[in-house]
Length: 167
Image (cartoon, rainbow, N blue to C red; front, side, top):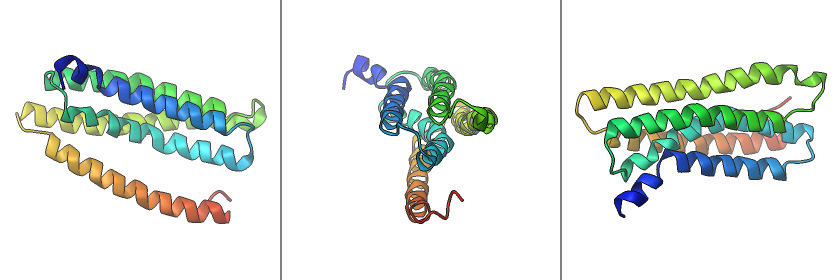
């Protein structure tokens, strides 16, 4: 893969694809029902964190300097977390008095994404300053995150399908 292609396949592309996937889910989930609204709120909980983790994935094939690439990840994630949570909040909105919790949730879900970004960015910065490779650590973080999400999917499928999860 040449240098230009590797640069274009960066964290911005990951976030654009994630935003497109969220837009497809939002389009499919209309008209809004109570169960669909619960699913959209659960997506607001997990998608910002997943997006941050996936934004670090292009580090495996990136050809630019690690410091510059980390700055691209942070800038793309700061903007995209807000856009993603806004899209999902707007889709889960009833546009009446029942949406009071969505505003607090909007701030809370952005904070969750920013916390994961701060943890991952801080860890990557420590490795960058120590002149060590962050890629083995990133590999294990992504493996553990995938296992966690598989377990969540199993729990989600059996609890939400039975009606126990959301009340």
